[in-house]
Structure formats: structure tokens, C-alpha cells
Image 1 (cartoon, rainbow, N blue to C red):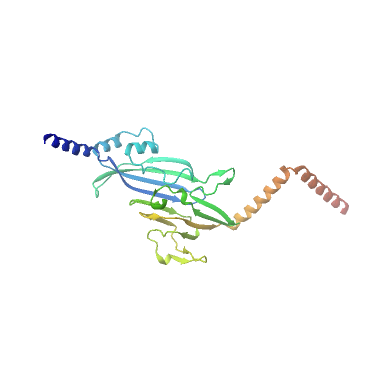
Image 2 (cartoon, rainbow, N blue to C red; image 1 turned 60 degrees about the horizontal axis):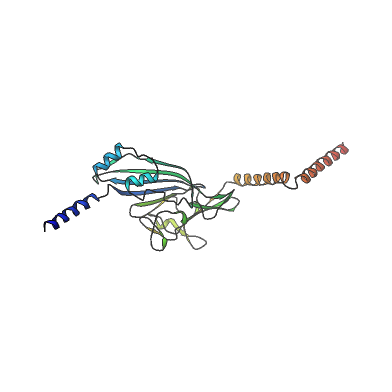
Length: 279
């Protein structure tokens, strides 16, 4: 009997040591949409023991990278929430935040802020399909279309592989103020029904003035966001001039460059001769 009581006591004592020192508080992922989107992620966590609090305050982390932060906190949620195999990540930095106390929750918490640029992958100057957070296509000389690439999402997944935002996980998209033709496969949180209308394709289109949208604690099956930007007329003129300039360069540097030079020289000589005769 005594042995049984001792065993139960040891089990209870051992179970008490299994209480996690760190517990996930919330995750906030913000995407500033543009050709090469800027991503800011803030991953916050509670510090649940005095020992961990003292260590966190006084002992700098040996190596300021994601692996070291996961090792310290045992939180696998400290990661990039866009897949680096799909989006080419650059300018990656980790910014540890100060520890704070929440009187309402009676607990200390801290956070790690991650910032990076998410590019598409390229083969030379050609963007590879289905890479980057947004795919970008120029459908007309002045129209650039942007489509969210669902494959880039690196949140949790549910039935069927759909992306899932957990209870305290928020994804925010900040679209450019010039964005038009905005379409969501899943309505953002707090979106008003009056901000939508049916487009010419029969799909619901956002027509409101807001350009910052978020989704929280929800499944995102076949999730996509689309919009387009109409470039100014000066951009179309610049593209036309660049195209002509590139063609001229190709003519004079390509395989038939000698023939082109001879032809231009002949035209110049003929023009000069005609002008001489007229004088």
C-alpha cells in the first residue's frame, strides 16, 4: 500500500514538472502586398514560470534564429508562415520584443517579430509559375493582375490539406490603395455585406474603401485573393520606349548587326547626297 502511495506521489510530482514554461499567446501575420511583398510576423507567448522569466530576461539567446527560439520555448509555431520553398525569402531579420506583464491575465508575456521580403523565384528574368505570395501578370499594357498563391501559406492544415488559422492566429493583407477589382474566395472578418456587389463574371466583388483586411480563427479552403492595379499612362509610354530601345539594341548587337549598320550607313549617305543635290 505504501509503495502504491509513493508511486502515485511520484507520478503527481513528475506531472507537475511537465508544465510548459512557455505557452503560445497569439500570432499576427501581416502582408504588405506589392510586387515583392513585405511580411511582418509577431509571435507572442506567455512565460509561465519564474525560472523561465528570469532566464528570458537575463540570459540573451545564444543564436538569434528561428531554430534557437524554438529550442528555448519549445513552440513550433515560431516559424515563417509563408513557405520558403515557394517564396524566395530575403532581408530576413528577427527582432525580439521586450517582456511585458498583463494585469488582466496575471501573466508575463513576450514576443518575437519576424520581417522579410517574399520574392517570386526566377529563371533568369522570367518568374517561375506558382511562386511567391502573389502571382503577377500584366494582362494589358497598363493593367497588372495579382493573385494570392495558396501554395505559399505555411499555417496549420486541416481536412483535405486546407490552411487553418488557429484560435489566436490572424492573417492580415494590406492591399495598395490603388487596388481595384478586389475578389475574396472567403470574406474577410468584419466585412460589411454592403461593401460587395456582383461583378460581370457573376462573382462577388469588393467595392468598399477599406484596403486592409484580416482573417482569424477560420479554415481557408481553396483560399485566394485577387485584384488589379491600373498603371499611369506615363508607365505605358515608358514601356513602349523601353521596348523600342531594346529592339534597336538587338538589331545592332544581334547576328545581323553588320547588315543593319551597313543599311543605316547607306540611308544616311543617300539622305546626305539628296540634300546636297537640292542645295
